Length: 138
Image 1: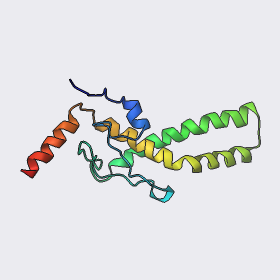
Image 2: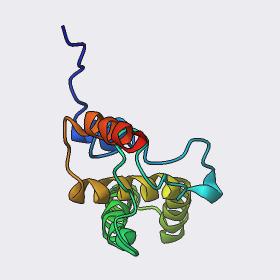
Image 3: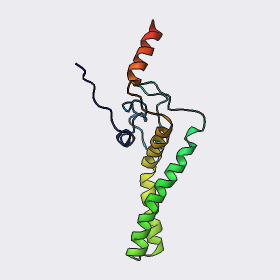
Image 4: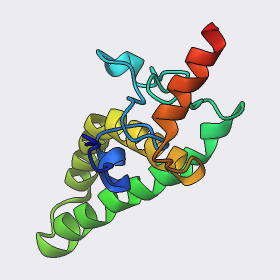
């Protein structure tokens, strides 16, 4: 009788910043602070997939973070400028404050989303990695 749990969904893996191949290993090291936002593991500790695909790989994640910035900017603009008609300085101040608070999260989620576009889920990734590790020991 197998105690295999159903795999976590892609959206859940991204939301919890998990490896896109096995959806169990962590992408980022624990205890990362604001100054160490980019503190990623080199490889998944569960399935061994490399998170460093190639030099400059995560430059593409900037496009995703740009889209996330627009998703923050537009509703704030509509609420402050069109609905409440506040002064422009209030809009800019609140926008910069919100963006400054969300920078670490936007950075991490844009990397997780971008990596999941190129690394696909394999339900047997953990078992294969364990077997490779055992074979390497012998």
